[in-house]
Picture 1: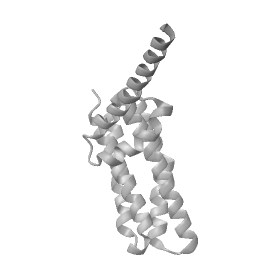
Picture 2 (picture 1 turned 180 degrees about the vertical axis):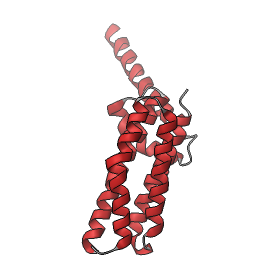
Picture 3 (picture 1 turned 30 degrees about the vertical axis):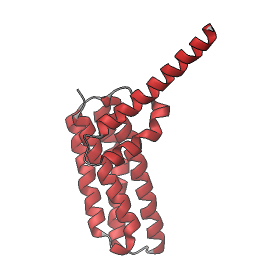
Picture 4 (picture 1 turned 120 degrees about the vertical axis):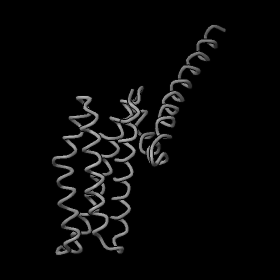
Length: 167
């Protein structure tokens, strides 16, 4: 009988922990420009990272989910460049994403670690601005790249919104 009660207690604790994390994500993402994107970007990571605060969610969203999207977008650009090596709009996008990868990611990660949220938000907003320059400069025939740029922009804006929620 005692073992049955112990098993029930363990199941209840695990159930509460899983839903506390999911509730934190849902409650935090509800206050972003793109709640569905924010939530779907964070949920795959919460089992391995177990964020317990809005600050941890902001770090996870900016440093992991957003960086993954940036690298995925850069890979699309490189693939398109192989088919159109002289395309100036792709070269421009390639240069923009090289700058994001080589400089801006490190800057916003450093400021986030140092809890300099104003600098973090400034860098994330810069990423939004330059990604929009890339997206506007590409042809409609490259809708995959436009979609990837939009994902980066949306996720960066969501990260800023989450940072603003840090107590």
